[in-house]
Image (cartoon, rainbow, N blue to C red; front, top):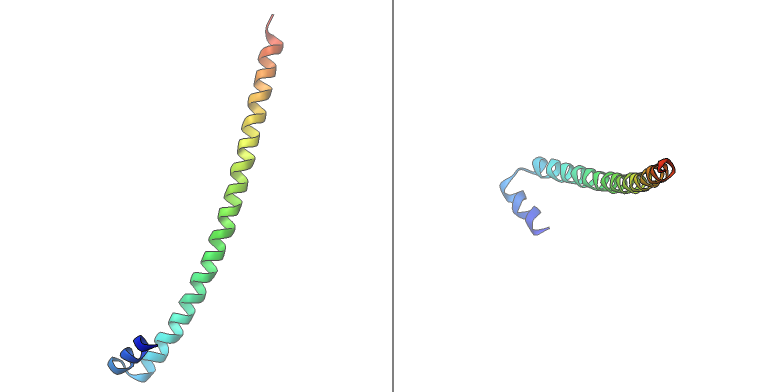
Length: 71
């Protein structure tokens, strides 16, 4: 709060209130973006896991085909 008092002496009262409002809005937006980022990170990890599974499965099927086609 000391920083807010310092700003109040340098900036008129209405400007301080608008700065506080904007700060609160930005703080909420940062929180929202952090949550979205976390959800996207989780989805990305899930997609990577699925891709690893599919890659392993394809490699297994390719190996089976090669073994089957050998004389």
